[in-house]
Image 1 (spheres, rainbow, N blue to C red):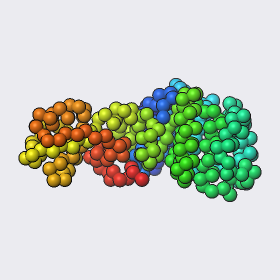
Image 2: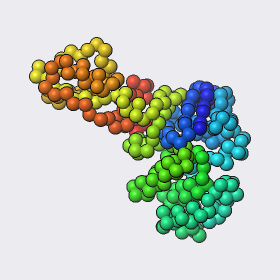
Image 3: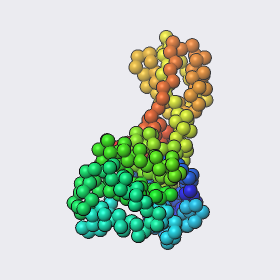
Image 4: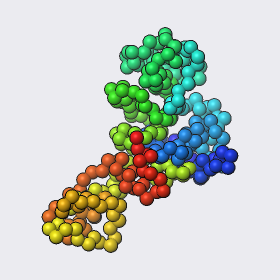
Length: 299
């Protein structure tokens, strides 16, 4: 669905994007993460056709995005900073969206009104709370029936119940209509629940791009206890982190979990236990060697 090839962009001599390559397949939910200043917003503005690339290509279904009305009519974008016309209410914005999106589903709009019972559709959207403004943005975007939805910090400001409800609607559209979703967020715990592919940006480059299952299978947390303390580990062990509480050692090991467990089993330990890692832990240990504070990609 999305193919980015060697994308470069500079602003007054500063390289914001340094040859980004990205691939998002149709029907995927792709999580884009990274610290502030990594280039996520600049990349998204290229994907939505706001910026013209200095070099490289940005393609959606094989077509360039910049100044391509046909491609843009098939995508919906919800930025972190929302924009609505002055004094416009939800119904007026609905009519505006109908003029932009030929496939806008008016019946779906009224059916979905029950999902947002607290929104006064005749009240100026700018007078609604930030959370309600974001609900209106999702409401209009879903009814536009996009083939591609791009989200920047999508559920920031929403309460937990509404966050779950909106993700449920999005995932339903992905399952039923093969809608493709790209979401940029600092909320790694939430991405773990919804994404099937992840890309990590750092200093204008995409450092890692993998399926979530591959990423979770690449790093293991293993607890091991030996009577005589921690023995010497095999030389081929790629240990990212090691700590201990008494005789129980916790290892964060890169590579296959079963192979690591088998190697440790040859040391005659009292206990060997492989534990699951969260996506947040994977980022902490996987990216810990990069020259930035890992806490910057967390919230």
